[in-house]
Length: 441
Image 1 (cartoon, helix red, strand yellow):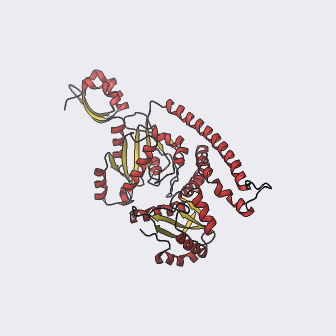
Image 2 (cartoon, rainbow, N blue to C red; image 1 turned 90 degrees about the horizontal axis):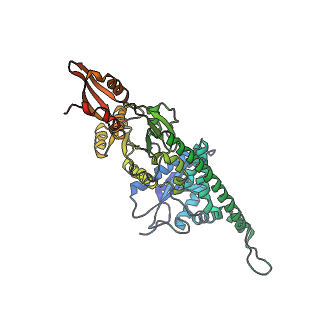
Image 3 (cartoon, rainbow, N blue to C red; image 1 turned 60 degrees about the vertical axis):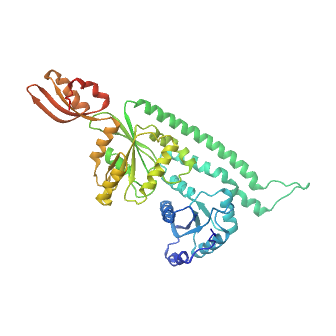
């Protein structure tokens, strides 16, 4: 396939809207490579997501551009002609930066900035910026700082290389090349960053150990964790189930801290439910590693509520992305309930079809409090292995009847001449109490 080195006419038409933007906010162009293996609609959807990420980071997007290539250019990611054209357009529009929908190497970023005189950041930097702004607790701030340092470490040459370029290549009297200021500073910075990484890892390990102690203290409780693609509605559902008052925003990564609360189930069995940071496609590996203390909630769960926004047409793709992250952290074998959220925003027939398509699925609307009872029954069914039992107890077992009211859910109770007839939903752990009184069906 021949590489498209220049912007097309449709992209150039976007200049008309440049003058309308207020210049007191950061603005950017976004760009991506589309290969022969890429689906066109998926490529544009990926740019839609990048635009939402930029918006969350407080960056206005002036234009979006794609280049068709068989593979990225090793030294500059895009082709030379494409970057020359986009540089001209950026300077005319007054754009502050180019955002690339990929993770650039230090060489690619440095070459683009030095050769074409434009500031460039990649998708990972945008995500790190959002995480930095949204971190509230000490734990979240430590995890974000760790991810930032791990990202910066291999890219220091890009930050300091300009010193040597400005000073020229100095040589000693003997003719041997001496190291420039930039190279010396890189060594100093690398040592400082590694020291910081070591200190932060130590602090995070302490937090992880504290959480492990807390988990052991509540070992009798069943543990549920809400996971899902960012902005699927996890915090809204968490608030609905627990009255936790967690911040809810229509923005990506509004929640970074894991929050845990008690969930009251009809059987009376104690359960702890946790909200987690949202997942996203191509989430940087070092970011996943940095958030291991938070993601441990998912790894340690007895049941995962995998929340899916079915009003988004890419929901099936998002399910796959979340499952990939769960697999990478060792949580792929934990039982899941697929919670199809925002059913109030789609046709009823689609909601029913998806409920059958996904195994162990329940359709709800967390915002409208729809389908929550069905979800709770499903949770109890999988978490506690709940079943409905029909019992006949002698009147001498009044104490057991009282106990069943405490640990189970009584759906029917009738006092007859030959005994007490009960229909009760009970978990597997308590079946031994009623085995001899079960009425065969």
